[in-house]
Length: 289
Image (tube, rainbow, N blue to C red; front, side):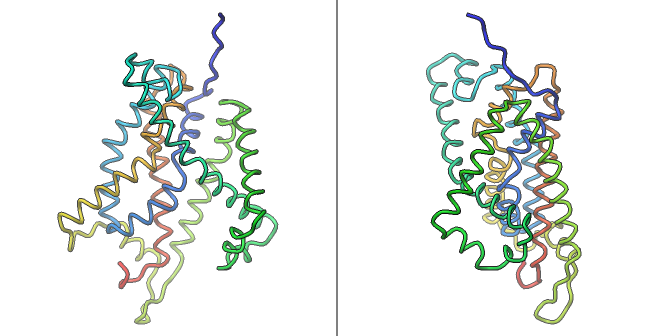
C-alpha cells in the first residue's frame, strides 16, 4: 500500500508563527498579567523568565522533537517512539486536554467575532459600555450563531491544510496581533492616573512598579506561591503537556533548525505576555500594589 505523503510547513518561520499562534492567547493576554500583579510584579517576571529559559525550553523542545521524529499525532507518537503498552495511555491523556479546552475556546471565539463586527461597523463606543457584554452573552441566539460562524472559519482553515491553511493564516494574523499588542502597550504608557491624594502618576511610573522586583515582605511561602503560579502559567502559556506541540512538530521539516525555531517561539510568546502585562499599569496606584 502506497504511503500518503505528509503535508509539512513550508518554512521555519511558518512553523514559528503557527506554534506561537497556539501559545499566544488567553494565557498571555489575560492570565499572565493577572498572576504577575497578584504575585509581586517584577518578582513574578524574573521567576517566569528563569523557568521559561530552562524548564520551558527543554519541555517545548522535547515535545516538538517527538512530533518531528515520529511524524504522528500525540495520540500515537509516544507509542511509536517507545512501543510499550504503557505509552498508549500517555497519548490518550495528552489528547484529553485539547478536548477539554476546545468548547470554551469556541465560545470565546464567538465573543471575538462579536466584538470584531462591532468595531468594524463603527459600534466600538457601544461595545465599551458595561452592559454590552452582559446583554450579548444572555441572548438566546446570538452567541450560538457567532460561535458557529467562528467554528466554520476554523474548519475552513483546517480544511485548507497545514501549509495552505494554518501556516498561511498565521502569517497574516500573528504580525497583525503583534502590532495591535504593541500599539495598546504604547497607549497604556501615555495614560496618567491621579491617586486619592491628588498626585498624578504617569504610565511609566506604574510600569516601573510592575517590572522592578520588590523583595520587601517576601516570605518562603509567598515565594513558593509565586514559583508555582509561574510554573502553571508556563504550561498554559507555551501550550506544553497538552499534545499540541507534538502535533505541530509532526509537520516540521527535518531540515529545520529546531533549537532556533523554539527560541523564536518562546521570545514571541514572552514578548506578547510582557506587553499585555504593561497594559495592567493603567489602573496602578500606590495603595493597590
